[in-house]
Image (tube, rainbow, N blue to C red; front, side, top):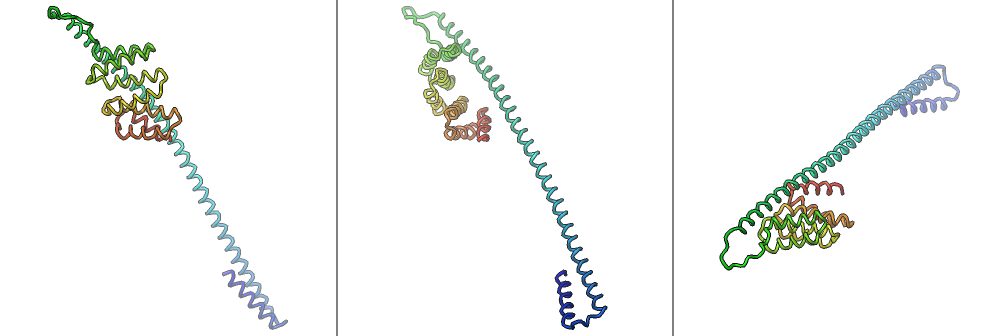
Length: 259
């Protein structure tokens, strides 16, 4: 519309120029009217553009405010999630500790019963002329002996008792745990390579044992401590895949998310 008004004024000026000095007062008045209309049109257009700019700026400010609010909420959510993971991890460690104490107490009771049974068998009448030799402790008694040696800081003596248990009682239900503690004895000595080898043995020989996910987790931690995070990842993924309900699976998920 502005261009149209400008063209009209230009045409009129051209006509005046062709007519020379014969422009009348009416022509001047028409020119002034055209100029006023042109100025009003330009002013209205400028006002509309200014209003559009103000609307656009307000929309941009609202968008920025919304983005800042969303960013703040996301940061809070991440902080809450991290805190929640830490709380869950601490609670799981506490549960593991309590569970370990209960399992140890149960193992001690089994060893006590085993010793009583062995004592009763030793007092039974024997055949005349039979040679009496020292009775070999049962698997639970051997296991408790080995654990006591570990607690005293004697991993070599602990391994000796555990090896005897595994060889003499290969079908005992305590064998997977005994094998796991052989690895723990090596770890106590600082022999990481031997410990990792036995942890792997626990997983391969006793995959259904509740010590298997723990052994895998120990292996993964050993890899991470050696700066081999890439080698630890498949072990963590295997824990999550093969032992999804174990405590170690929850810990493995946290480590996998942290990468």
